Image 1 (tube, rainbow, N blue to C red):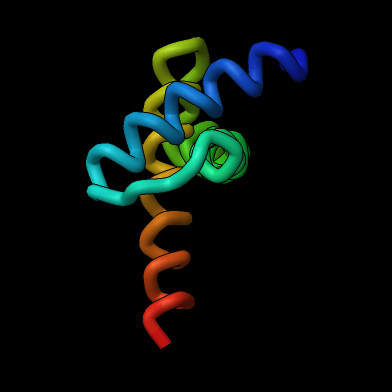
Image 2: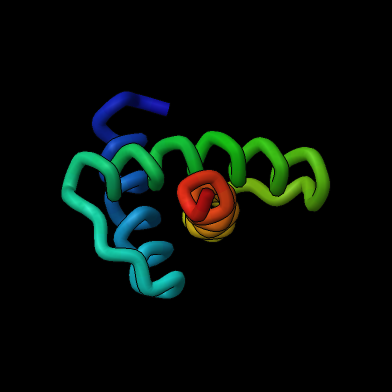
Length: 78
């Protein structure tokens, strides 16, 4: 996966995940959440569900980003 493609999917996934979770973040944080979520979610979905393709990557990226936002909220509430 190229860096540009990863950033585009990450930006989209981060945007969708922050809107679903109701989090207000900056552009860099949104992209970072999306890219890390794409890596985490993509790996989990490929191993567990054996899905491939763009749709699986986007779904995995959004789910991974949602998990990261949840963990981020747990870490910052203290």
